[in-house]
Image (cartoon, rainbow, N blue to C red; front, side, top):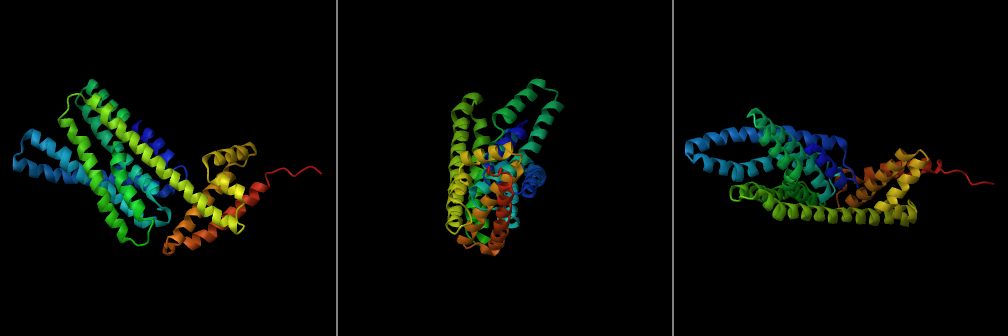
Length: 322
């Protein structure tokens, strides 16, 4: 259930310019497998050090939750996003893309972590504890890990808008700082409050709403890029201005899809919209001096695909009566 909630949230973020499924599957598997494995291995080593240091039960729990977990887990998750930055540069065009990849990594991590938490409560034989942990982690805060790692994804996404791979490494380190700090705050405050639900309403809910607002602003930027780049193609005859208006607005896309479905060509219209959007970002990469990652080759291929889709869609329009 928590994963389903996260899935629909990411789907909303990624709706305008969807990322390749293969990259998203890799992101999820990295989060659910590799990053969890990193956290478990490091945890086992650090627990030995803590036991030797004699911090006591409270000190050990505080260190693990507020220092160890935020650093180790965010590094493990962030490395997956950084690998995608190198592997799929053609599909890493900005902060929204980075947030999407980071959200899938974090969603995978939370998926496995929830299994461990729920399983521990069930193994302890506490039905009430299991229900409470499920409600807190699965219903009230399924996006917690997503919010932490989103800082890393957004930072790398901003770096991806300029040429060069070193910027991505620097952005990873920069994004890691707020990710770790927010994670540490999220875990640490639980040691000092008595009314968790009051704290949740006063702090965590507003924090989540601010995050949604910021993502909404970034999604508006995606629409502006689409409109500006496709308008340049319209100036030389590749698109009609009405097509640009349709492709660059959510309402226009909904209307186009409704028309296409009524004529049985929904998949064709969906492909036309997807390829036109990717074309806009291919040109955006060219203008940003990122042609070394194949932007011109992508542009040529996408122009052909857009033209083919348009031709097929015209065939769905009834011929006018004589």
